[in-house]
Length: 112
Length: 116
Image (cartoon, rainbow over all chains, first blue to last red; front, side):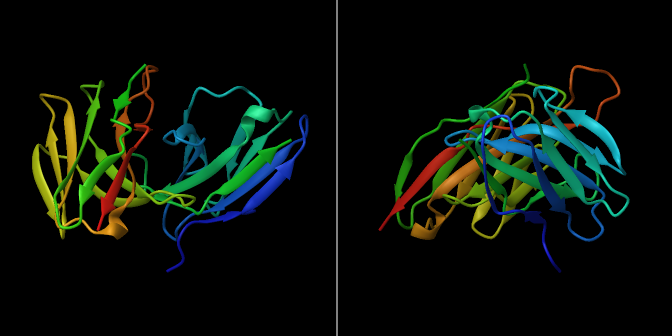
């Protein structure tokens, strides 16, 4: 079975631009979570969705938003990019909230 | 702020030795605990989950949980150079707002180096 997929793999944007990151969960998984990871740190929780509803939001500004579609895939949107948004963005899927999570390969975002 | 603490290391062990990785957490209500392995430049990979006090073994890996002490550990027996990676501890915590779902909170990870 295919694992969690994310696109794009790498992305370079300039300050002030907008970005959309995409994630497809493992088949049968209904929960998707998004994380930001900077070098030397653990993943920081951004959003969690289950059955298309937001179930949790981390300590990130309103420039960050997300949604989950009927097929359980998800998008993370970041507006007005800042240099500090440069990071590895990880998507993880699970059967439901609180269960074991499986990560996708991530999207490496560089903001210049 | 509900926290998960790990020693960043690096922890250096010789090949064939037992590597012991430790994690403490602040939320007494936490019910689910996970260990992930992350190679440099890659995404985290789930190693084990543990939900009850005591030990859980899977091959060369043993997770240990002590909820009274708010402590979870991972033992790697017969360590191999291929085990060299960062090991992330994750704990499901309830957010401060009532009615929320458990949110996975990660430690910063411990770097393990297994030398031949």
